[in-house]
Each structure stands twice: as structure tokens, then as C-alpha cells.
Image (cartoon, rainbow, N blue to C red; front, side):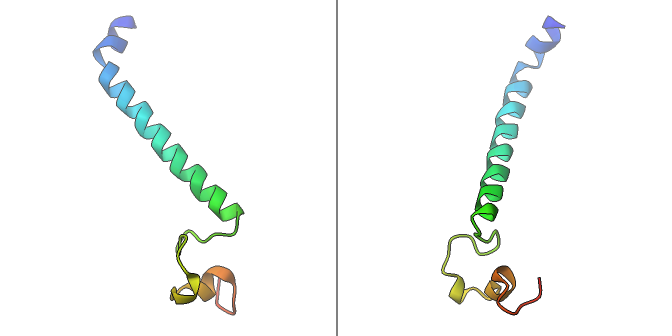
Length: 62
């Protein structure tokens, strides 16, 4: 078991780093969603975004 971990240490470390990055991205998206920010528009000026009506429920279909 210990030999397996030593042989695959690089792969394990890179996998854990990538898992952390993906987790942080998902957490950020969920946080933005709870704050009412759109995932599509991001933090831009939504008035100029062609999808603003759909994102913010201003008469657009959801």
C-alpha cells in the first residue's frame, strides 16, 4: 500500500489540487446564485446583456 502511494504521489497531488479548484469554482457559482447574481451574465452590466430578461425574470421565459 505504501509503495503504491509513493509510486503515484504526483498523480495523487495533482488530482487533489484539481479537485480543490473545481470545488472552489462550484462553491463560487453557488454563492453567486444565492446572492442573485447570474451565472450567465457574471458581474457585467446586465442592462446590456441580451439574456438579462431571462436571467432576472423581467418578462422572459425561465
